[in-house]
Image 1 (tube, one colour):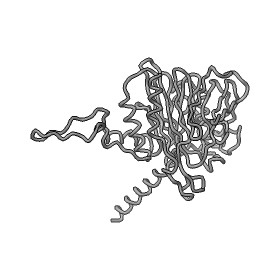
Image 2: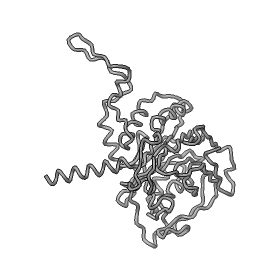
Image 3: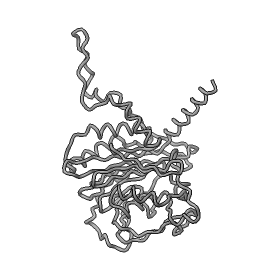
Image 4: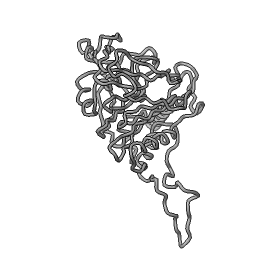
Length: 355
């Protein structure tokens, strides 16, 4: 009986944590002409105050060490020009793409992310968790380069004042060569997993999501034939019975299965066509204001009663090198191309989402 109570309690805590997780959803679609399209939604319980951030080549960044001080960590100079969305007006990326066609984002993982614990001597070879995507996009062109570099450095747990603590997340990356990887820090260890489907949401760990896919192998975009019993047919009430049983809640595991099924059942097409399709897929993960209410004690609402909703949605064309974003306040699509600005400029550029 005690074991049963313990199991039920653990399950209840897990479900409660899952229901409070920040609900980001990401995906990638391949084009028959060799291109790829990356897309994601961003949800949070308080306004992230995101803007489009443009980073030129040759810009110097200061890594944050274990003491939380800029410059005490691993410093670097950007090799690739990068565009993307920041948060709280800070020089960092929560989503973005560089000129080489490497794209990806950070997705909240408050229940699983646990970063490394470098020593004082190792601190100079570390960056804070919120700098991870910034570091990767400004330094590397491919997934293979990232997989080679990250084991040679550390990601520490320096808190982020604007976040109210350590920014715990996982990173999803896709390159123009057709490779995808999920980067997690679990139990203080770096875990990198090839992402054959290309989708990602939030907690639990990526390995759990991959195992869960097997529970939905019955789903298909193709309608099933009517059931026939002794000559009598029993047809479905309407079209769409192939996806009967598709999970539809805002929980991370449900969103992972849903977006994976949409990707797996999307027909082949050119990159431009897949870009248009990506917007429609991501529409299915738009969280209306009021659908998720966070109590001030939950730890996810910034210490106040708040509503988690879709703050912005991104679609990036890795072939055309275009980065497009629409926001809650501005549903019109803002487009940034690398041909639009000086990639060798001397300063960071910030473009508001409201124009």
